[in-house]
Image (cartoon, rainbow, N blue to C red):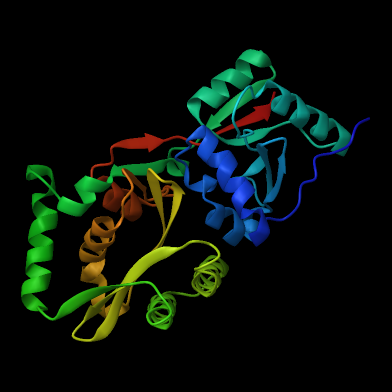
Length: 296
């Protein structure tokens, strides 16, 4: 038997190695953001290792995310895939995969014919948008969005959008708390609120950007963002205070106008009908499936 992969919880000092491996493959999934790996490590049992320029990840948080992710790095991935097989054997855990793209799933099934069954859930797919579409809301497809913003700004002409920094982070936290308090409490919502607070506390080491929308001087909405790669930004959190639910369209546009990425990942809808309708209303450029491969 060989040596298992040095899988461990993501640490802030791992950021550079992880980002380099992700950049080498040019991925677009929200799970590839270092901020996501760091902030969601407890929820999904995320363990990572960077070895010989490849990023290895293993998830054991729940039935939705279980197994190894595809190894990411520059060059031939065959040795890295063999390393994962060896690691699973050494640990005595099933060789199964999650968070795969269609190409990654096809490659693994080609290498191991008849060994896996594929599982794809529509609610796990990431929504990818052209930043220019969200920033400018062009054409007839976005007519209702433009009208909504026009009505909101006409009713509330005294508004401004400020970048997320030391001066606005407390207001962003207050918006998140008001959002939480307006809902029936659950462990999932409490976990999300704690993750938001953690993100705001670590916005600099996690390289988080975003901003806060103020209406009549009061904090109304917030967004927290990071870059997966220079071309793809990920909206981690976007919340409105209960009295300003109509501000979502405006904060969505304002954050898009301040990003430099080509695409914006607004993550999955988790099969929630209202969330799916809202995400589809912005006309995604593509849906990015996240595929699991389970042993037959």
